[in-house]
Image (cartoon, rainbow, N blue to C red; front, side):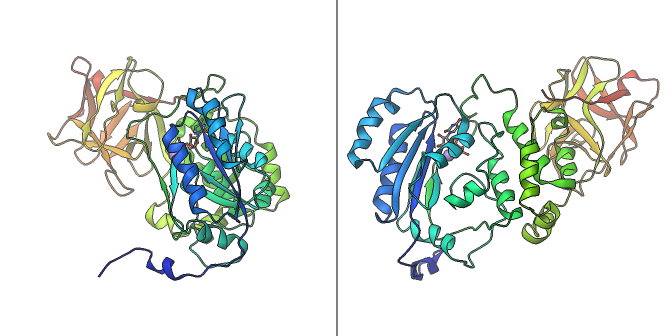
Amino acid sequence: MMKCSFCRCKYWHYDENLLTASVVIVFHNEGWSTLMRTVHSVIKRTPRKYLAEIVLIDDFSNKEHLKGKLDEYIKLWNGLVKVFRNERREGLIQARSIGAQKAKLGQVLIYLDAHCEVAANWYAPLVAPISKDSNVNLSPAMAGGLFAIERDFFFELGLYDPGLQIWGGENFEISYKIWQCGGKLLFVPCSRVGHIYRLEGWQGNPPPIYVGSSPTLKNYVRVVEVWWDEYKDYFYASRPESKALAYGDISELKKFREDHNCKSFKWFMEEIAYDVTSHYPLPPRNVEWGEIRGFETAYCIDSMGRTNGGLVELGPCHRMGGNQLFRINEANQLMQYDQCLTKGPDGSKIMITHCNLNEFKEWQYFKNLHRLTHVPSGMCLDRSEILHQVFISNCDSSKTTQKWEINNIHSV
Ligand code: UDP
Ligand code: MN
């Protein structure tokens, strides 16, 4: 017998009168074949009476094939496919908001990446729930940028926060905004769209020069500051270096939230994302965070980007955070991102490894003594500045290599 994950999808009957849609595809330097596969699949697999237009937003690409050749090619569809070009690189977030303004014909806006292929019968299951109240699966937040939204509702929500830059965090912004301000976000497993993921290690198109540093992290901070209320402390507990980021003005968004009587984040966590904390319990508060520097030296503990069992080392302090950014929390975990420091396999060198809330609660920081104690062994954190090693050894208050300081650093 054949098994299929979504068998029931085959037997559903959908309304014959669905809302019409504008399909919006934003792209920056996309390959020709992937872009065309996206467009062709939409045209081929969407009932013509529902497909009002396909709107391509060229986000300041410089590849030759995306210029005249593209303009020529889309004439094939007699105006059904349109292309608009940004005059500077806007990033995918603002490019999607621009797409909403350019796409005037459809009742629904459907966003696709420029490297997708829509499957047979993708349209009805995606759009049907928008026109009537249905019981398809609720989803607390969307993972990325493939979604359908009623055009008027997207405008009511003010599109994306205009202060979000380039890439990242917009999926959360739109999800919280939808839920907290009275909408619904649904997951529709019967609508299938393929998406090409990047190879691991691909760093993304570099942001344009006019954008400052850490745009994605700033985006997260904006979203958290506007929507998370008192829960924002949990965000800062795991990304303390983002506390000092200049994330721009959010007063308009706060006003929007007030004017629309949007609900609290506590409501969202309790009513919509109610099972999240059973999988990801709220983290303990930080006691101290920053770089862990050999007291009065220029050497810091550095994970060297290692995770899951790699050894940490001593390296010249660079004050850029990243691999030298650690935190010690109220549960006595000494952490970097989702990883904890603990004693390695040789019983003395320090390794970094993934941990949950109950693991490796092993460290105490005595600020005045400049000492970090490994509680289970009763030993002290020590270092060799010559060998660049970090290890534990018997506590000896006369050893300067057992003295440490943790000082805050802020990313720029
Ligand atoms: N994109 C864009 N401007 C940018 C970055 C991305 O228009 O500055 C487009 C990109 O071509 C793609 C969509 O936005 O069609 C989503 O970006 P990407 O595929 O890089 O995101 P991912 O799928 O990796 O999350
Ligand atoms: Mn993509």
